[in-house]
Image 1 (cartoon, rainbow, N blue to C red):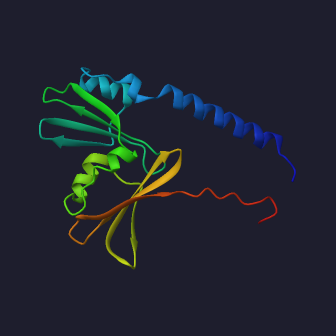
Image 2 (tube, rainbow, N blue to C red; image 1 turned 90 degrees about the vertical axis):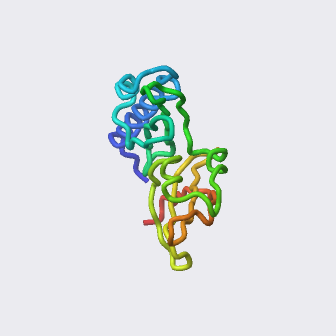
Image 3 (cartoon, rainbow, N blue to C red; image 1 turned 90 degrees about the horizontal axis):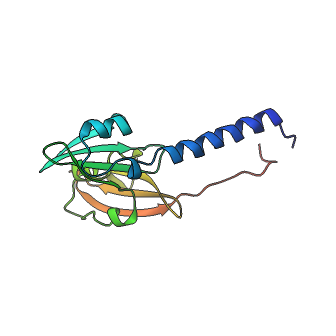
Length: 167
């Protein structure tokens, strides 16, 4: 295999930029309780979705479909930050109640999925979330025809690398 130096430099620069951008943007450090909604938007940008809650509002900053994190910023009735948390993790997924939660509950708590899938053996939507826990993972939420969660479970994402001699 011939190594292309120019392509190698591009990859190295792209990796360096990705590392720097990951360090520069960590909403768990830049947003704190008490900040106003305008301050949150100034620091994090426009939320992917705004969801009404019983006593306030949730700003959803989801990195799906490609990313593996979703940040929920909960605001009180006056528009001040109550909490911010990254919800794509095993503890938050464990809160899903089979037979009780609906699609709307899942979307409110986790934001939009990476994809909505269908298989012949299941007669409803399957919401797929990408997340990270020691390695890249998937979390599948199976909805029945009425949009009620009937199954939910994690799975490992396999990273396949082909050998150099495979076309």
